[in-house]
Structures are given as C-alpha cells and as structure tokens.
Image (cartoon, helix red, strand yellow):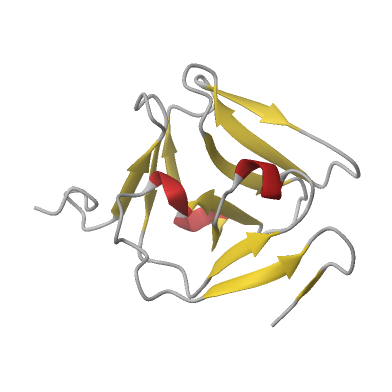
Length: 128
C-alpha cells in the first residue's frame, strides 16, 4: 500500500513527530502559495477543503493555534515538533473551509496539481 494512503484510500500526512495526522479524500484541485506575512515565513502550500472532508488525529491535544490580525483564521502547529499542519476558518458557516499544509504529505502526492499564487499581503486576490 502507498505510504500516503490509509486503509480507506484517504491521503495521509503527518507532522514530523507524527503526533498530528491528517487525512483527506483526494488531492485538492489546486494548491495555494500565499504571500501574506505568516504564510511566506512558513513556506506552506495550502490544500483547501471543507471542514467536513478532513480528519485530524492528535488535534487539539497536540496542537496550538496562532492568531494574528483580524483573527479570521487560526493557524495550527504541533506543540512538539513545531510543524505547521493546517489552518481553520473562525466562522460559524455550515460549510466552513480549512486548509492543510501540503508539505506534510509524502513527496509526489500533489504532483501535477497546479499552484495558484494568492496575494494575502495586499489585494486578497489570486494573482493568476
């Protein structure tokens, strides 16, 4: 079995120490490379899903949130190894969005998935 797939054929990822594990149904349609002040420092590539599509094991007991600015999302990282794992929108919408850090998946899982550049620093729009 491919290391990136679990028994239910969901794609699996984890932080470096393995305390936080993420499972998604399939690669996202595209990845987001955001240039906001925190994302560019993290170097994350975000794969977006609805909250209902993602299973996170080890959260919240092994994760800590970082909030900044308007505090519309919380960015989560592992309390042990420090890997940035995902962000969650802080709204009450029924189909809330979240994104997982695609860099926590095994290399090749997102091969061929287009990367969209998002201007989170200024215009809050995609640049492509």
